[in-house]
Amino acid sequence: MNHHISLLSLLAGALGASVSASAADRPNVLFLAVDDWNDWTGPMGNSQAKTPNLDRLAGRGVTFTNAHCPGVYCAPSRTAIMTGIHPYTSGSYADQTHMFNHPEYVGIQSWFSENGYGVYGTGKLYHHMPGYLDLRGWDEFFVRDEQQKRDGWPMGSWDYGAPLPEKWPVSKLYDPTKEYKKPPSHLEYGALPNAAEDAMADTIRADWACKFLKQPHDEPFFLAVGLYAPHRQNYVPRKYFDLYPLHSVQLPVCKEGDLDDLPESVRRPKLNRKKVIHDRLMELDEAKPTLRGYLAALSYADTMLGRVLDALDENGHADNTIVVLWSDNGYHHGEKTHWGKHTMWERTTNVPFMWAGPGLARGAKIDATVSLIDTYPTLLELCGLPPNDQVEGVSLASVLRKPQDATDRSVVVSGAEGMHFAVVNQSWRYIRYGDGEEELYDLTKDPNEWSNLAADEDAYAEVRQTMAAHLPDHPAKPGLGKKSRTAKLVIQGEDFRWVAVDAKSDKKGNNYRE
Image 1 (cartoon, rainbow, N blue to C red):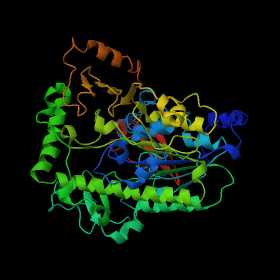
Image 2: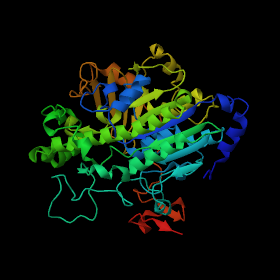
Image 3: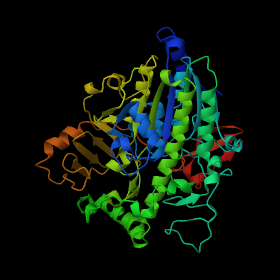
Image 4: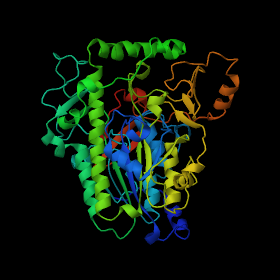
């Protein structure tokens, strides 16, 4: 593919050739992304989720147990990880596309391409909707159906002939008498026949990656594999549901009145959501089946990751490959009476972040706070590539080699609405909303974030001031985006572009073909 390379990337490749390590000395990169996977893994201390392949990866590398996503929603978090630029710098807080608002940003795939790597990808690495895949820099980007290319490269899993349950929706949240044109997504789950596994989108993507790893490669490669699971809908083969008998599923502990100490502007919408979702799940006795669906999807995704890791081992690449695994954001299953993501709390922001490869520590855990914005600069240093001066975050290469040298720091997480931010470290979580309202949690005494201390201005004034000092001074305004009806997607054959549009003239935010 390798089209739309920016001038900056071309110049960087030319200038970097003299300072980079020789191609023969460079490690490969296996870049693994999962979707909506919270901190429920064995290496991060969760005993309910069955993830033997993540356990195996942890044993051969480093697990950051206190890693946080750059944004609390899919599109901005992935944009930040792939560009190395915070949402508060790019203005990509929700559905904005950096290719449109900031075409000068050089994605990690383009940087590797222009510095001598073969660059290959598949699956959900950016937002899954049409028009969000950055097409620049890839030698090949695999999709399971050629029609996807003509539809703006969507990366969802439940279309283009993917297997579905015989009857849907399954969740009792949905009206069984209503006729749905397609399966509703939120908190929907269902068991597929075991024989359907080979036809599932993530299985096809994992199989393609395995075939790639079986091929000889004359140049170092950057292979990116994005799984859609455990993103809703949680449709996976029955054998993964069978791993979690319903009687064994344990719901997170909730505190009665947990939302009472929130700022009023936050409390009202959270209480409304609680009534519609959390309370309804409890009334229908549907909370455990819903959680079971998520757990089953975790184990399915873990199995697909295991296939790729097996192929890496079996074909002699493991000794010279940096593996990094990350999730774009976490997910609540009743914690703080919330089901879903988008919050500024722990269950949304804390995500798996695992590394393995030559020269890195083995079987190590690092509790120091880090951000996934650190992925880009870390990979450049580990692979001996020139730095990209646009990139924010810090390289973690030194602590990956010597975990004992890790020190804690405060990291910033951007909210999906823009102008909402959380600052997190080992001891505290400080949240400031766009209207100036605040939350503050002492994580050493209150890991569940049940007691908002922000109202006690005198006792915690110094803590609030220290945490607030990490907030961005001049956060970017939200860029143009489709949902705000200020941009439209124009599909041109197997390519696409975004253009500005008068919101009044296109109230539906339609896509266009040329």
